[in-house]
Image (cartoon, rainbow, N blue to C red; front, top):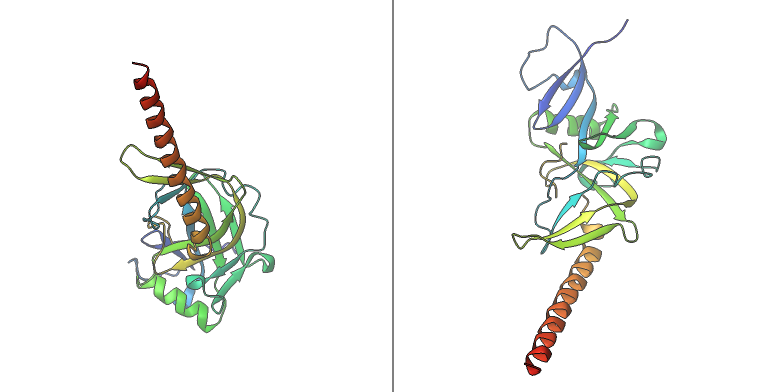
Length: 213
């Protein structure tokens, strides 16, 4: 018999559970009936939180070619709290016009029950992901408002997706930043050096032209 599904949405995260007339229609569900979690690990075109001098945005197509990699669902990126894995068939990834979507089955263990409870009562409502950027896979720009924007154009390796307490991308429903932040900071410093060099050369050119005046 086909099982009908209903969803309880908590700030962008969904818990899937079988339709049961005994359950209430509110945003809190009987987590004992939940069988999975759905969320967006990243959304295209949405700015991240400030990341140490810059903000970040992800372009559509950034995840092309990485969805077949072995990716793990981890709570708060903690390797001691694995929830599902693509190679095991319990984690499924896809990309649509919104962003990187993930869905995983809830195992019958304490870790999964705890995470389901956190999502259900609103303590956890957002997501994140950890990754590395491909060579020449990002672009740096200074926007009209003075903000330095890093655009992720191509991801080389996707390691995990995760329900998290504190995401870098607040709109991402239920990236690990630490693993690639040092590299991004180095690229930011190089960006500043290039800007300073351009300003220096432009000023030197102005002085040179003025000397002929």
